[in-house]
Structures are given as C-alpha cells and as structure tokens.
Picture 1: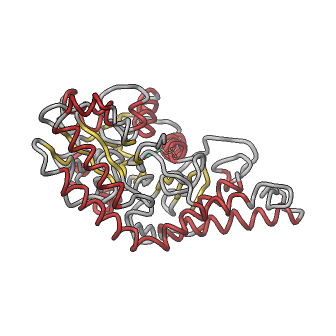
Picture 2: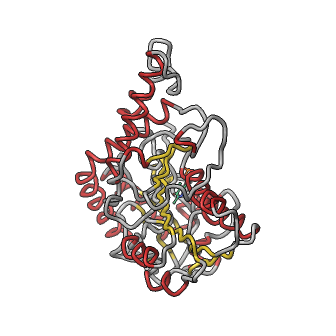
Picture 3: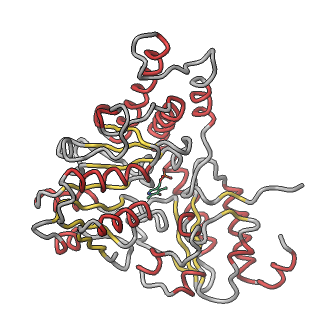
Length: 388
Ligand SMILES: *Cc1c(COP(=O)(O)O)cnc(C)c1O
C-alpha cells in the first residue's frame, strides 16, 4: 500500500480539525449561513454577522483580549504587514527607527525592508546563543526616535519563546509601540493581553487547526489611532481592513481557537510526553544537538542538527514530512536565516531538520520516526538503497 509519510510539520501548517470543518460547512450553502455579514437589513446578513462576532469573541478569549480589539485579516502575513506598514504610515513615513530581529518570519523581515526603502531605520537584533531576544538587547537598541518594536513570541524554526512581557516593559518605558507575531504561539503559550504590555499581536488560523487564508490582528488601546489601514474599500473592521468578511473562514478560526482553549492543558501534557519520547531516542545518537534554549521553548517544535556521519535529509523526507529549514525559506532554497543567525554555517544548516508535533501525532508516529532517523544515521547507504 502506498502510505503517506509520517507528518512532523505542524509548524508549517496543520490539518483543519473535524469540529472546525463542520462549523465552516454550515456557512456555505443556500440552506446554510451564507449571508454577507455587512447586509444588516435582513436576516441572512444578521445571522452571518452574529457568527462573525461569536468567532471574534472566541479568538479574543484565547488571548485575554476584548472582541472589539480583534481585526480580521487574511492571515498572519497580512496582520504583520498591517502592523508594521500601518504604524509607519500613520506617522506619515516620517523617518524614525524600528527594532526587530534577524530570526523573524519573512513576513516581518521583508516588510521591514520595504520600510527601510521609505527612509525608516531598522535594527535587526542578533539572538543570543539560545536563540532568544533578551530585554537587555532591546533596551540597548532603543533610540529616541524608536517608534515600533516587532518581535515574535515563538520562533517558527526553533520553538523558542521570547519573554515578551519583560520586553514589553522596556518598550513601554520608552513610549514606542510593541508588536508581537504570535502565529506560532497562540494555543501553545498562555497569552494574556489584558495584562501583557503588548500593543499589536498577529495570529493565523492554519497553525492552530483552522483554515488557511484567515488571521487576525489584535489592536490594543495604545495602538488605536496609530495604525493606518492598508486595504481600502468600504470601511469594514472599523476602517482598518476593508473587504467582505469571509464568514466560513472566520467561523473556522473562531472554532479552532475555542477548541484550542478547551484542549490547552491536556494537549500540552500530551505533546510534552511525545517530545520527551522522541528526544530520548534521538539525542543518544552521536553528534546530535537540539538548537535553541532547552527550557524557554514550546514542546511542539524541535530543531535538530546532525553534525556527524552520513546525513541525507532529502532521502529521509521520503518517509517523514518535516522541514529542512522552514517552508517559507524552502521556497527560496537558501540556508535558514535563523540557523545562520545562531552561528551555524551553511553546511551545518543543511544538516538540520525541524520536527514539529501536533494534535494528531501518536506514540507510534514518534517511535517510527525515531527509528527511521536512527537507521538513516547509522547505516546511511543501505538505508537509502532500500528506499524505505
Ligand atoms: C506561518 C507564520 C506566519 C504567516 O502566517 P500566514 O497566516 O500563513 O500568512 C507569520 N509568522 C510566523 C511566525 C509564522 O509561523
């Protein structure tokens, strides 16, 4: 039988949870909830609006925000663009300085480059040896004209978790805005925006068992009036993001976030146990190293470098779906900018894989994957010849 590779790439995307699919289907057909949420004069529109607002509450609830602070977007890429360009444009692109890091997602790095072209100075902080951005590093980089700091909560390649609460204190004390890309953090790290000193936060549905093509931006009290819309055409979402709301996508994101909230503690325990089981079997191999902080991390995402012996990650990917860098870097086929920032050379970066676990990972998956990797390291030529 032609079986699919084991799935160990939850950090690239997740399947949509069956419970979420059911909620989405109900928003599509003629006998369903298909109205335009902006058609407030009739029942079809009113019902769709109710669904959108319920989803907004579900997203807000997972992260300790108020529903009116959540703006729908097409994904975390758009949320990041809206946060960075929106804040810069609200100041009339009048120079100034922003701080981000070398290990951000391309949706931040490419957007920051665009802002540089408009005359804004950008500092790209170097992570420490653990893959973390420290509050001290942010503090030292702050200038009098720094108006925005943008850092990720959880790194998509390493799984490391920045102390955004402490960093936020530094940013607040200097009266800049603080944006956090939480695409990899929502549902995995307990986020409380009612307490955290964070002004803008980006979310994506498809990293958390929701559909692709929908996300959200949290806009906190300090950021109100300081973000300019980037997509115009009807003034939806309080004027911050026009376009007919995609009811089925939004309902799916809401349902996915509600499921994540309900499953949070249980899921964390399960993933920790699976991670331990996997690491136990892999870290005993010679020359294997876990990249990034051992303690300040989520259990889901593991970046492993195999520095000794034969290691052919292309062949291994026949039987295990993992990421050789990140899906986003893979598109450009260059060594991971995150690993280079951590001090890896291109060769070591090429001997690094990211394994990410999730809701549907089983003990059996973990044992099979560990066995495949161990075999690949131990007897490389024979293994590749059998084409397992
Ligand atoms: C996946 C991801 C994004 C992009 O999200 P999309 O919804 O796919 O646009 C941005 N930032 C991080 C950290 C991500 O992991």
